[in-house]
Length: 387
Image (cartoon, one colour):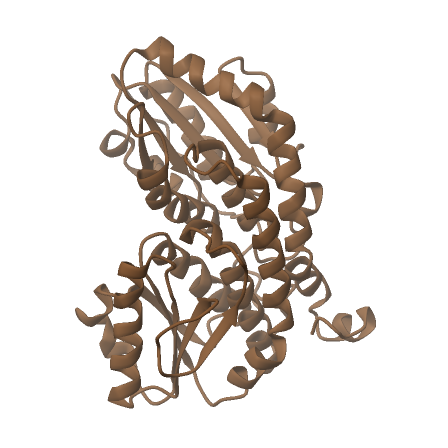
């Protein structure tokens, strides 16, 4: 796909999505530049609030759909590598907050609501900001979004208790599927809140190089797409467990449900969900760079491979793995923490989804044949909250 002409891709209905997957490594470098440019101001915004609060501050990562999965990836990483003396990191989808705000928002606890949004126009994302303003007494907003014209960016720019961090212009995906928007927002939040890793420039450089390698694995990925399957499972642990949600959603979206998907943690999968696997199932596991955690990732791969119940059982790893079966490897001198590794890993999953969409004769750029699933969610009624 990445070597086809624009004309060929247009005929497949895949031009936009293909190019947006392909450009991501360059956007990660641009995201880092944006972070560096805003670093001092963002740090002051966050630190001043933490000092003023005189107690631990809740940092709530929120969004809808793919934007919610950003929080699922970054939260485990920040519990390990963030400033946990001053902050409590949580990931709560806007779709949960809007439906049951008092189950998730705590009026008396100082909170930084970190809103992730591609367009900034999703009804639940806009409503979450409004509801949080009503419920939480001491609140700040960090809005990480790809669209300067979106409602979140526009309202945030007028709010002295908000900071808007705009992602690279090209991360505002024009295709249906969120690709560069997801990876850029994930990277931005890691850069802002990870206060352990000081070599961020080097990490982003190596991460981008591995993203390019992921693109070059197209032929290997295509060999898996050519197998006979109608189900796909993604597994992982920690931050990479969060990534499984996004990996399976890309495939579900781009095939319009013609391929059924499942996701779970590497340890959780045995507890019932393994029943999903049959002779037409492909199983992928994102293998952790933490040596202890990787043992569990490899164990489930070896088990399913030994059961001989799946059409293929594939590991995705950096540099090397002890798994005895098929693996897709991306390489770099420095082993990246899993949340950063998630970005080149998801490029592989996005490419698999793209190729599978074409295989089932769907159109990746406009994958919903009925038009009932939209780029920006429609049909949501936001009901008035009575305090």
